Length: 451
Image 1: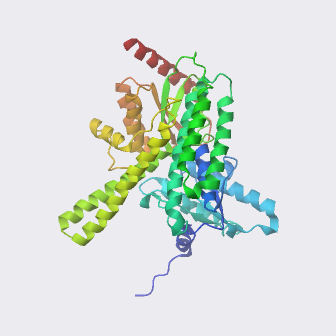
Image 2 (image 1 turned 180 degrees about the horizontal axis):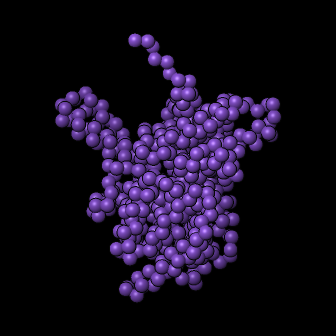
Image 3 (image 1 turned 90 degrees about the vertical axis):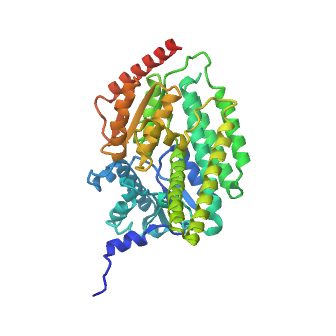
């Protein structure tokens, strides 16, 4: 048989999309959760990576021009962001623009979600521009639980992973402090203004001391921030209906893409809690634990001692990591609770327990639908007055979520709203949100009468 020659396109997908050392490069990070993306960039800068968060949503038309419309909306947004940045950078630098100095950071996931193919598609699009073909694409992947080995030197990878996780929790807590206080602030705009000051202080701390894992100082800054923003609340205002947001992680955390949904719900009288970014990271770690648990049982049945103990070591390592993550998350939230009653995060094992109890879905199927369905149940158990499911138009996991949650919550008389996005403005969007918020307000009043 003759030798099989790999097509050049597939060679590019393997050679210029992957894990490689990003030191010495300008790392381009798509904006997503505003606090989280900026703290991630700060963590990378602490390890001498020139990381920046790109401007977002200004290149949407570019993203749509080079996609077919069958991709989900976040793909168009992020593609537009990178094309917009590179065109602007090339115009700024002129002949000194060198594409090989840049690396585009775009994580991926395994499973049926189209997100796993974003970086491949965007590699093909970048290669359509000779001036941008030298820009490589680096990723972290759920396949190895977002291991940072490969993008950083071995001596830095583990430390960066720890710093990045705690910074993610801090970003989530900054979000939850903002959402808890802003609807009740005694002076409009004071919460957002101060949280930007707090973010800048946290970024400075992380960049200057991140290598030494300054968790105690980060926790002190979180506590000081909570103490200050708590003083912005007007205690005479009654508690609003609480609205829980679930759905696709990019759309629900990217304000421009979801047309500032949280602020709009607040404008109609709600108090919002969005599912956290850490919830997804914890879920990925937990899925790794579940896979290793299955392999451990299989090797035990086979009686292969060598393989069994090899898997056992990995299983113990994953167990320790999950415990460490839970401890760090508790430490951050505990520094806020003396000043603000922000919403605690959902434990992944609790979400799985709810799914099993009600027989609605299974972690064996996976995808974000598992977290959205289980997270919605957890919100309801915690006394929330409505659920909003945010997702890209045609998103498979969120469509599954909608098909399951809508009749289930209707049977419980819990207000529920699907909000799909593709970049267009739906003519009835405001009416739908107003109606939903009226139902949530009525639900809150009825709960009060039943007490």
